[in-house]
Length: 139
Ligand SMILES: [Zn+2]
Ligand SMILES: [Zn+2]
Image (tube, rainbow, N blue to C red; front, side, top):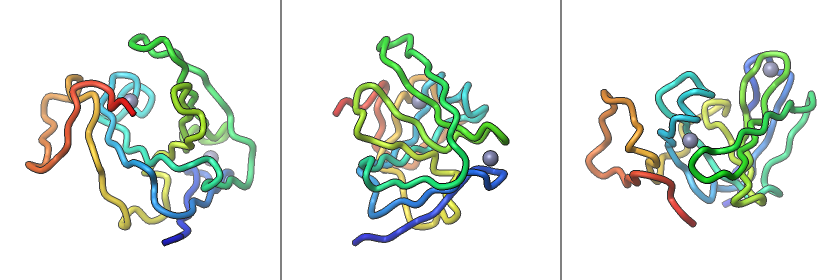
């Protein structure tokens, strides 16, 4: 299955296409994701780097170091409208991790797991069958 999906930033300066299924689909409740998104959690779809193709403006990059691991996480965002469309991580540099809310169509994927649930907002309620990790999922 090699379905192509498209997405982009709020202002449309940056567009991308993904090919195939994500290797993992995660809801991340860590404090860093809450701060950088201004939301309760980030929905992250990880693809092999050769399965994501960008067009339009150049992405702006902000590198942050995790307090927990000391490793870098790079936010790749639109310099015009500020939408973070992708993350890359030091731990696995062959992944392009798409911010799922930037997809044009979000109906085709589900979430495999919730991570960093120990810092989830107190009103968060998880589906009964949710796969949850208190901290990072390590593979
Ligand atoms: Zn934009
Ligand atoms: Zn996170």
